[in-house]
Length: 273
Image 1 (tube, rainbow, N blue to C red):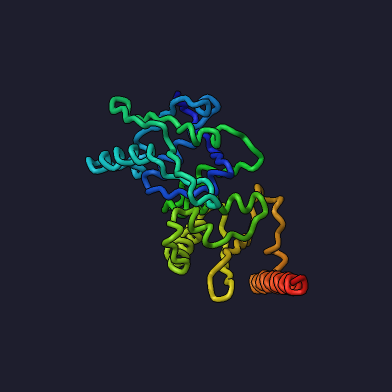
Image 2 (tube, rainbow, N blue to C red):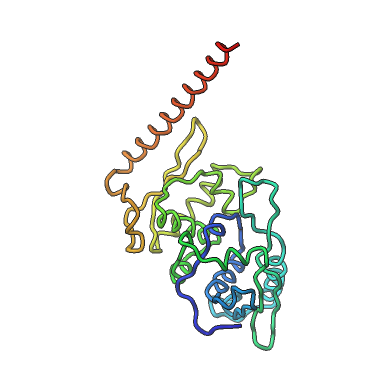
């Protein structure tokens, strides 16, 4: 079933926002067009129709034979297991986005159906769902910035300001055993943040260390949009340097308390022996 009316406010469940997925540019355009057409009927497992021109040629140029070949590979890839939902379960299998995908040449449409494994995460409506304006998502140039925007939007909506850097790299599709955190920050994270400057969620990031290693990403919102009025405006009350000092102080306090607790437990064990 295809609707001529697009959703201008896209919705993604918390599970999918925080899942690990790494799309190509074409796959990102397809995913956006798919989300913009999901209705209650589609979420029952019905077929969704996506216009080919929204996936192939956003610049309105005439698609080439190579474009069609890349599109065919994309449809095949999206029916293969690729999305990981839980980083705490390293052996959990990846899941496909689509159950099937078919290109209908006469109508210039992609006819697709969501996979049964992921359908519940699209169908359930929850207060934890994240909403994002379509016009803002279309401003982003890279797939990493696209996923990062969803994550930052969730942080703003639910009042979170800290993300573990390794977890963020996993969410943006980096292989867990091959993550170079310094390279990830320079190559991916800084670029994604810069792209958010032209959206309704401009932000700054500080990467905090644990010892000598990069550990936490602290997201600062200089200005908050109307949709995020419920977020405590810590950044307005404290300067960036003060926030850094506060967070590093809390981390040091946590390590001190943990060390004291371990020492006390060791003494108790020795005394008992």
